[in-house]
Amino acid sequence: MKKYFLSAAFIVLIAPLMLSAIVVGLNDDVHFDYDGVVANDFHIEGNVHSSGGIWPKVTDIHVFGDPGTGTWVVNGYCLTQVGPEDWFFTCDFSTNGYIQYCQWIHFGIMFDVEGKNIITNLVGWWTLGGIPLIGNTTLEDTQGLKQVAITGFDVFGEGPFDKKVRIMNHTNLPIELPIYEVAISEERVPLEDMFTTKLGNPGEPSPEYPNLNWIRIPTVPTILEPNQEFIFRLADFGVILEQGKFLLMRGEQFELGSKAIVQGLQKNDNDVTVQFSFPWGFFWEQHGE
Image 1 (cartoon, rainbow, N blue to C red):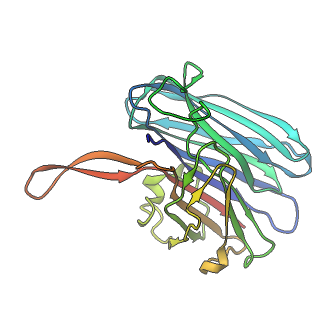
Image 2: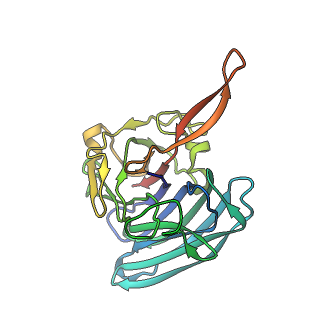
Image 3: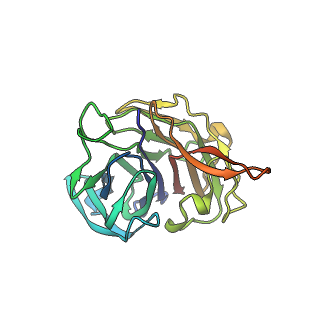
């Protein structure tokens, strides 16, 4: 089975005791794994929650791509109210070139909302000329549309010892979570730092934030079927989200059944070229109290 994925970073600032503006956002690395085809746009959509009927505001948005994929720009976004405290958002990132197998883009979207820290129903897919890559590609999907592996989130609980994390799969494919790590930070990490070269891959120290102590969370179940969620309590792992501090989370999420491997080349001590493999599918999140 071919694999495709999206690695996500979420940023949330939780205000205690009263409704107040909360920063909530997506920060994602998207790897293109469609062999034999190209795309020139990535589409993402989902639901943002905001209390009291207060409209969310997009406060920050950016995108850049792998060298050789052209110049990436925001090709428009939209927020539409669909309930008393729910908004549906869509966003497209486009290039004047093309992206092809084993290349990537990185993007971030930041919202201001009221009293909520939830992004749900997240899905994303690649398009070519505005047309989603579907049935006639080398990838197979029982529902036609080639969605990528992406999870929504919720951080909830009344006090610092009762904070829980909910990870939600609203895509049309099963998602595997092989690694999930958390760390407490004294400072808020900027949106533009929420990717691998700043916070590091799972299992590694953070290059730009060496004081972070990452704690691995057993992701049981490791498989999230469509519309399934996974909840864990932070205090069960000795992680306390106190007022004024920030919870960072990172991990991996892959399409079920995928090897999620990218092939590369390196030289050993005898100057002989050998192949090595490393996984893709990293995501990063941030939540504050």
